[in-house]
Image 1: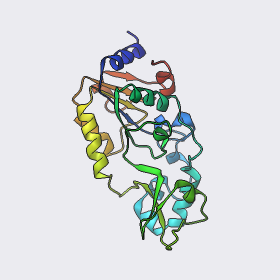
Image 2: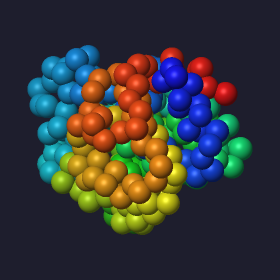
Image 3: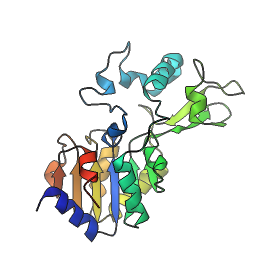
Image 4: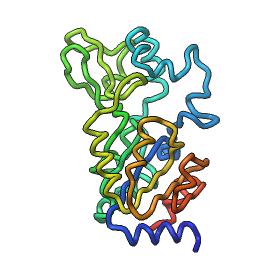
Length: 238
């Protein structure tokens, strides 16, 4: 049986599916990933992206942080692709119980998926560090230099930077979803970002499927591995 046909069989058979996705889910919408050859981490800046996207750098070099953030992480006009849309269809059919994403681009929500758990936060939520007033993403990306609240405080995106902890409620819900899934679809992630990658250890279901352009460290325990673009795979599913 061909791999796509086998994946379709798994999807048809299972009533509880969970999707775990990374940067590769959004690359076909035009958003660069982080770790591939042409990803953000291989571009040249005065500082490395890992350093720029850290809590310490945000506090000590806020202006430089926002130069990078506004230049590289503005995806307000980006549209969902076939993968996002297929998952919404799967959710509407009652099969998909949740999407766990490492992405901060909000594309799953743009595609009208409802049960989305954003491990690393979202560019669409921004708060004043002083009075905690909420600001929309466009307020940040259209601001000059450092975005500031009307109270004078610095506005921080609700994204998890290096040195910051993940939201405990999102962690617990993600683990609960994975623990109860019959089929776990891991897509577009190298599974190298900790602690998110460790959540896979909670899976006890029937089928573990990994769809990714490159190999991962968990390929050997998966029921099915498809090394292809997500668009090629999800466009062939019904």
